Image 1: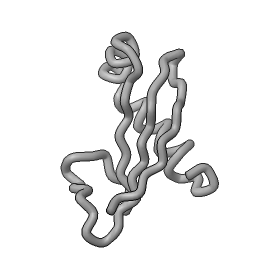
Image 2: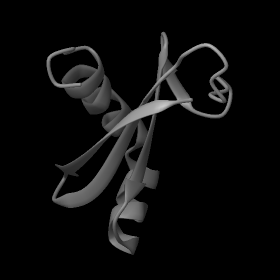
Image 3: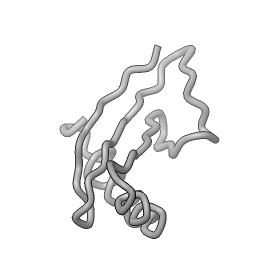
Image 4: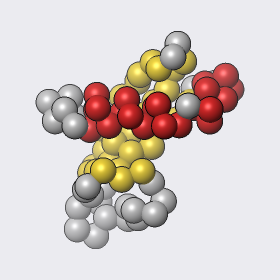
Length: 77
């Protein structure tokens, strides 16, 4: 069973839903299919088409923000 945390966030004026999955024994999380930070995987879902275009053009920026604000700070998870 995979536990996850769901957060609504805004980046660059666009709304996204962030899902953070924690890995456990028998977890279906596959490191090659998701962005993985040690034993944590995450996915981000844009809420509209313009957010989708923004995410496509700013993948590295979004990845850095998620890593710094939501994965490295254990108090927020």
